[in-house]
Image 1 (cartoon, rainbow over the protein chains, first blue to last red):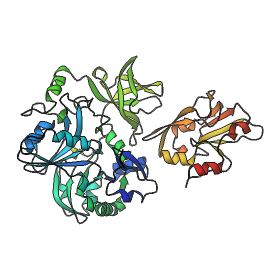
Image 2 (cartoon, each protein chain N blue to C red):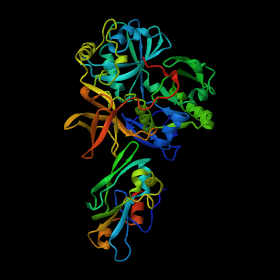
Image 3 (cartoon, rainbow over the protein chains, first blue to last red):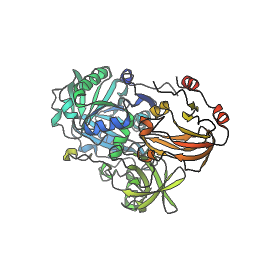
Image 4 (spheres, chains in turn cyan, green):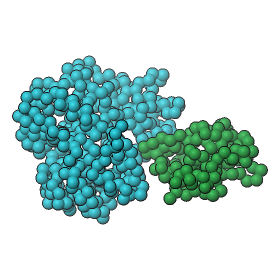
Length: 374
Length: 131
């Protein structure tokens, strides 16, 4: 392995005595700045600032860009207008997932794809190998920084450092060329926490200035920097999938409960459509469900899940929910056992503990302005 | 800096054992301040059973933080005579007070105390290890 990669914010991590870095998909990233519990609560109650500059940004341009993305992604790109973003997936012909991503329509014939760090190189190759017609793929990852400002006070904090009308942005809409802390940014009302919030795409050279400016502006409200640990628990409570856990080459989007982002009927089809349509027709064999362990124990990936003596699946992500203090997991189980209230068992260190299938998302914020991600 | 107590003995797996009173054979064990700070917010402790035989260096339970599961190893060989039940509802005591309120179990040693604890690290040696 080569040396770990670092984001432009790396020098700031050392400012926090309790910060700790881990290797995440080849990147040296902070798992926490203060403590996962404290950071998690800050995002649910006030706001948090995330450095997610490790994510990959790929620009797709050209007269055939829309047709190309229609064929490669599961959602319907033709529904986008400039200034709108969409959650979608890249699938293989067998329906397995190459990655999940956001597609931003920057302008006619110009799109930005935001992909998982660990998959970025493979995604680029996958996309490159399918180029057809007038399409150019440009990797913008190295010169792009990405910050996420998330939490109920995110809009109020961001409005102090920009004159752009960010309060009027609907979910999955974005502004280009907004000025934030004196730097040019693409600001979108998106995130990965289950809270209101924004993601800010910046030139890498502006990252430190905007990071510092936002933390300063939000300090009176309790804004904290947030590591990948709390990012994971936050997205988990909101049932947002994480590639490598709820999604993989071996799991289809339909099994992961992402049917709203798979437009089987869109014109022209897409890679994986036939396999997914067949799965839809014949019944999805496995389903992603919520599981609560009722005995003392915390479900973790990849603990086995049983119904009686039958092994019906496994935990994909699990933890003690920092918001709810319940021992919860997401599990991919045989469809016959997916109904809410089904009694199951989770095997933890050789012992089978009583558990039950429960509703997801585990946490949903109260304000009705969320909207869905299609 | 994490706290290291002079009177305790330590394992390389970051557990501590408190030497028993004269002629005694019961030692109290727990995890060190360094260990709790590395683990972060502890949300669950799986305790050994009272009466269970435990062996130095072998797993006797688990400690879980929000994100991680860590094995809990016994620093000594013997039989568990008491466990800290309070940790079941208040696992955070391991973070707050690893050497007092957050103790894990009491173990009756198989061997004489000198022999059982002789293989463990002194406070100074443990300090070197965690420097």
